[in-house]
Image (cartoon, rainbow, N blue to C red):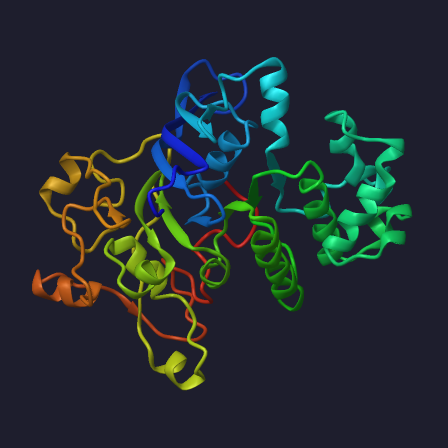
Length: 369
């Protein structure tokens, strides 16, 4: 981060939900451990991507950062200001500094409002709207690649990619410092996805924006992010620059996920072997003790079930593992050295559980936390 103070800092975020066991009306209460002690920092003008399986807590983390979900414990600071301690005028000023783009462009826009009214709504709420804000709305629509006259239309008249551009324009209305992007392209066709990603990259560079980018698509993360944090069952297990993590994954879970990423060369894609994680993700109601990944990890030893590995490292690289992989070492080679069997799947078209083929995280092909 070059020694400069980061724009966004999350410290020891915890989110737990209490719910009735056995369905509605149950007397016994259980606790869902959605997020457990997540900490990270995002430098101004950069992009941190958070990836993980469905239910790992990545969307809940984003909602706590955007002040949409109150944390059970922990703090979020934006530019040195405690997001959850602010109130009154300070909170109003803070809300101007954060924009949110949601996953579903069909559900996040009010169908009864025109596009111009949707984009102008943050301006009215923040009392920054003069004469209807028409000029600002036209400027924003042009900025995201739409025509100014589109402001008179309704959301149903646009494609999914155009609707997401409208959502981005709304998020930019009050000139925020930070955009929280929750799976912004996962609901779009592949042909449209690249255009929206290129738009986000151009806006970040032109406006000096900072992104917290939530995704399950490893290829998308590699295209848009500077740093990546990998989450598993409510905890970050590895964090570092995209180039470093993708080239030299240190956590067994990260290695398994990246082994599922598709190869552009069809011959290499057919020939390669990927790591197949056995078993299901444990329930967040009853997370395993120690390292939460130890029930599926081919390298797990006794200490893994007993002690929680701290997330530590240097040079901007952090990993939470008692036995991290060395640079250039593969999960299969380490498992072989330990005398452990490890399941290996085929390349293209493999769907036999664990890390999903196609470069997406297993169990997260659609909406989820």
